Length: 338
Image (cartoon, rainbow, N blue to C red; front, side, top):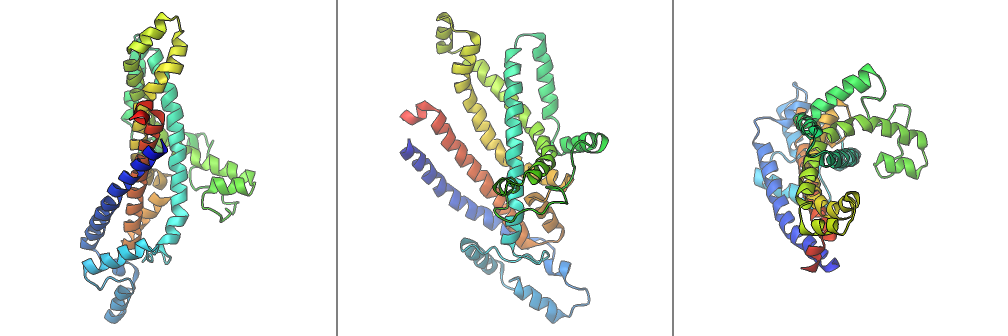
């Protein structure tokens, strides 16, 4: 199986590298063709023309676009992502500060979505053929029609403002100073045995993660129910019933193992969209993640930050799809035999 996994990773790598190069060219060229001057956004209106040109030369904007791209992509491969124009910091530092926050948010949202989706999906399958099936179908469709930012606004107004049960902004309380170890606040709090910081971070991430999860979980519910419905008419399920095995045991020990595979594929593919959906949710909850950074960079026309943030989103999506392919092989014995 290890050989098969390595073969999958190698094939993915051969596809991902050219794809990322094409995406990087598209992002770079489109940003450079926009009718805006990033230097004009940060320099004083009274600056002399030679000062403007010196600033453009410092950021490499005085060269032809192909030359700019070759310099930039070469620096990226060496780990130099350049300097932000408006943030007065390196792009690497900015990504290091914000990317862990977005990864944590996406992972918590995925965890909540799986818990809600699998629980509700099993219940929807359990009540199939009854009056409650129509109620659960309508409910799941209604939930599916709500985008994540709308869930975020609803949760903020109800839980954060009306009932004041949870904080509605930030990553942790202002009374804490986060340890600078890995950038992942939960991991750092555990490593330093800082229980109050861990609890504060958990309270701050609940609402944005739940908003993303509520928008994502209806897909899991419906796919899981559909997959289980198809699996339960297979011959081996009929044989298990003839042997007198209970429906609960058939569902949990036989049907669920095969019915969960399409759901797993959906979760992996949709994780990229979930990660991208953090952008609006981070803005609503003032969560200091990559999406928040990207929006601020767009406002300031900070090209180095925008292009690296966009490329980072692409890398995460491709990486999540690769992980799903590997997990599918691990969980599907048919593929392991091929």
